Length: 466
Ligand SMILES: *Cc1c(COP(=O)(O)O)cnc(C)c1O
Image (cartoon, rainbow, N blue to C red; front, side, top):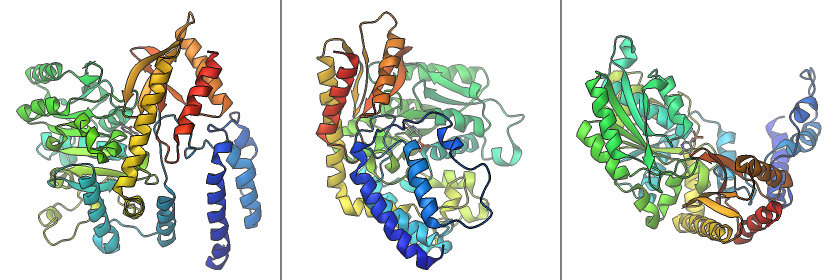
């Protein structure tokens, strides 16, 4: 294909995308194919000769599309959303067409400076004080890895990268037992070892880490000759929205001189609504905060905003040229590749800029508030329905429930969940709460309506036979 052919296919792609979205409600949310069905429909060997674009397009529609799960479906209530607002898709189209590498200021000054600007817009939007500086990472997992590496280097007086970890005391990082698995991976990759990720038990309805237990664990580690390096707190855990008491965690961190990272990958989007900010009260005292505009907010994946109280610590950890540190920011030039693990960087700021401008913060707030209200309504309706139990109450738009009335509740709810997802009108996933299998519901699709959430009630109760 050359760029003249691209004109034609680009228009067809735009039409296809609009038609796809217009017809989404009629598709089953979760792919309904058997394992291996798509693979066996694909030729074993690559073509030697060029194929016609029409043939490729036909196979895309006929072979691949039935095997896709529709994350932009209005009744996608599984996992967390990965919303792609149409305007952010359009921005990505421009980004793909320009295809710039934005690792240094000079490799695309506008990309760097727009990133600086939109990160500051997001900072203001979620109510972080102006001492925080943002950068866009590819994922919350990467941001958390960056934070763990920073904790490590800071604790080792910046010697870890050069000298390695052998001969060092055990570095310890603390978190609750509700954090995302990206924390485990960050610990593995940073070379600290899973055994040095200290899980603090949680308590109460918010499933927050017990600050006294945290304090005791740190003291015990110091007594044992270990080296406490940092604390990872979460606001809106993946399973049921567990949220640490950030202020209480910060009291401990400050007393102990530990670096802190707050993972609000999902719930951070809700902080554009001031009424939800009490969920992370004290966050302004953290060193590092991550939230994903690519989840709830509608910036097409991937787009993670990572806020730092002192970016110098991160740059000192990741910059290849240490002397650059001394001037970082001073001459007005920022090289964002020094703030993240990969060198190459996509122009991710553009979609966030398009999104915020096209919807306005007020438009995005309305979406989030609706989702929270509808999820609360659904939880209340299920709770009032004979045979259902709300296991964890709504945390923003996320709650968990199960259906009672069977000997083996885990198997019964797994079976109900399978039947719901095979039905296809809605898509839900599961988690375990205190060992019990429960069904998870979150409302967050960009185009969801109150009727879509009401349909979830109908499907759940119908298939549970109540
Ligand atoms: C989704 C999620 C992550 C992982 O986000 P990625 O951007 O996919 O790496 C981490 N933590 C929490 C709380 C999440 O919800």
